[in-house]
Image (tube, helix red, strand yellow):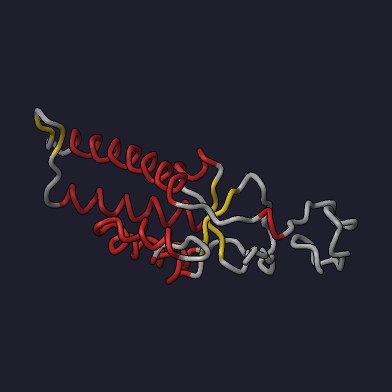
Length: 176
């Protein structure tokens, strides 16, 4: 087995790399996250994006007694901000603020860090995943708890507090 950080060969039972000191992860430590925590993270992200939408509505004078109603260029601006929000956060840090708040992280199924390509694929597929909660249903029935966007991008969502990924050749192993 090799260290997920520096690549030094280490014994299978070693918990820390003798060369760089980074913690090594065993099979039971990298469990994909299911619907509940991901749903809470999505709700936090939704609240942030709704606040952005309200600010845009105030700027464009599209507030109503019941909230706001974005139309035309302001609606496209909000859609663009939402797209950039997911792509930039997940593509650079592996987590949106909602995921960060809950200690979750998007990684490739191989264990490597999420990149911009994966983040774009995940974000485009959100459109499908949100119809009739298809994404949540798919998560319930897939071995690695992946929504359609995860399947298409080859990613999974895991607890980030248990992991330190800094190498593109990191590997995470899952129980059957």
